[in-house]
Length: 93
Image (tube, rainbow, N blue to C red; front, side):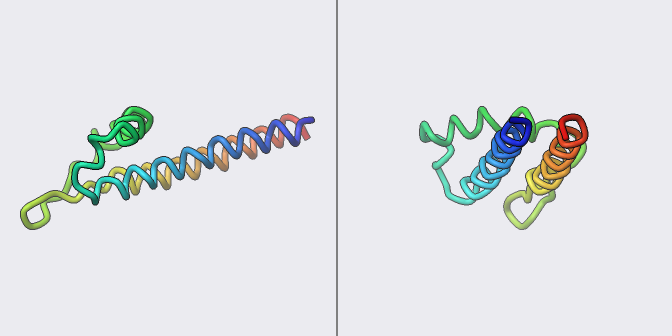
């Protein structure tokens, strides 16, 4: 039973990693963020990514900006995911 709970929690946390990656890929395509799918992804990821944007400003690049906060956010999320799974394994196994 405990292994199933850990597996499901790990799966949900891993799914959010793919949501973050989808958000990054969608930012490369114009007007995709205005679709209903884009708005849902924005609502799911913006509160988390806003934390990193406070500390990592976008870098000017030619005529636009390069936002590195999603990259840092994905790395941080992978550490959170690993930490949560390890703590759950320590608690239940």
